[in-house]
Amino acid sequence: MWNFIKRIFTWWNGHTFGTSLEIRRRGEKIGEDEYGNTYYQERKETYDGRKRRWVTYKGYADASRIPAEWHGWLHHMYDEAPSETPLKTQSWEKPHHPNLTGTVYAYKPKGSLDRGGQRAKVAGDYEAWSPEG
Image 1: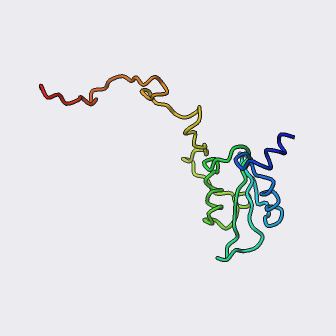
Image 2: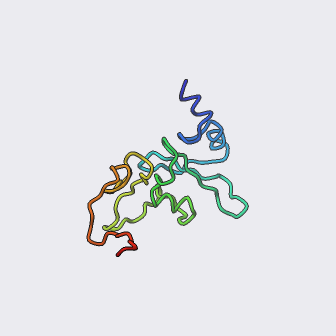
Image 3: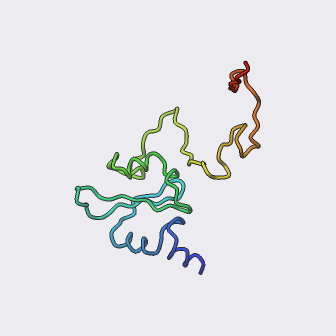
């Protein structure tokens, strides 16, 4: 019951009931990424001659959870979806990681307020101006 209510009223946790209806009416599923996000494309071309593309997120809606290859497809940089024609990856490329800023997993360097605000002094530290000296 709770999931049904969430589907009606929340957009940040997947997609709403209204979005589901719109997807069935106008969209076609193109593929999914390794995070469970689902990608769609409109059946008809829009006024500019291209088909509108969009994503519904699995879980919390966070644009940094879209891998680079799907981001390129969403923005019409590639005609074919990565599910049809996977991009060639280079040996130096690292796997995609979402942006963790603002979460409990965010990087907090020594000296940050979340870690006590104290850090070790270094040789080039700032020294305040003093009128006596």
